[in-house]
Length: 323
Ligand code: MEV
Image (cartoon, rainbow, N blue to C red; front, side):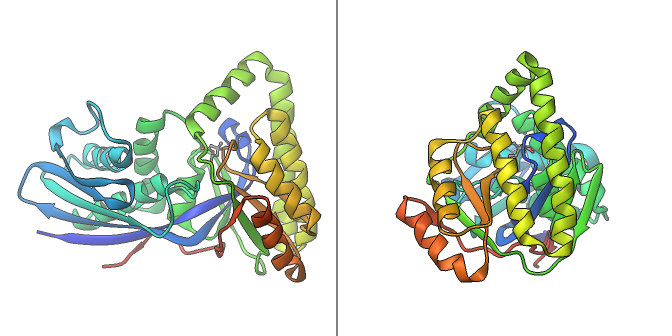
């Protein structure tokens, strides 16, 4: 019976969220907090999942019923990842999947996508399938789409490729960016964003006011393109300004929140070059770029208004086999 352990990084969206779902580019960075998954073959024809961080203990499902019926939240992405892989390669046989995380599933760092990627890579190793990153993306994205119905796949790309990437949906473009250390600060609102409902709300807006929303998305695309150049040049002050503009557009789109705004204003008043929400909005995290000598003051300011500073390093390595 074979075993494989794989890890993959979480992510932070830097610029371009929502617009990326509608064909525009975004910039995303992989962070140094990882999901870790061990897959062991078993002699039973079932999938068993243990994911204590999300309260899943010994959840068991016959292989031929994967993806059907009521699936607990904490198990759904892993179950669909196994199903997508088994469907693609006509696999048989049982597996036991153990999932653990270096970060909370509440903060919006992409635990579902990272664990999906880990499962696909571990199964590929067990079944001796040599899959290229692009194929891994296709299988993992299928698994995620089967659960949440939409999304751009930027989080899956970050988990697979790592680093900081300029990304266009369905991995049409995955361009690694290299630059000097990014002076990034992350503040968590304490509120879990509901990505699926935010995506639905934005889709409604697109239906009702396509011209307005497309204008916003074109403007965001331009910011992402400018930011790519400024990041490579190491002009973080300008990237900060571009993040401010991006936040203005996200506010216009209606996806910001009072708590996000409070943290963003606190960071700016304490000397950040720029700040914005990161991800779907409504909650999760805000990010700021700032000169080193302002970092401490900004972190204190974020905490003083009820945010939680999370220390991460951007540009982490993509999916890797651990054992
Ligand atoms: C959510 O973290 C980011 C969105 O752009 C959705 C996606 O790209 O899949 C809102």
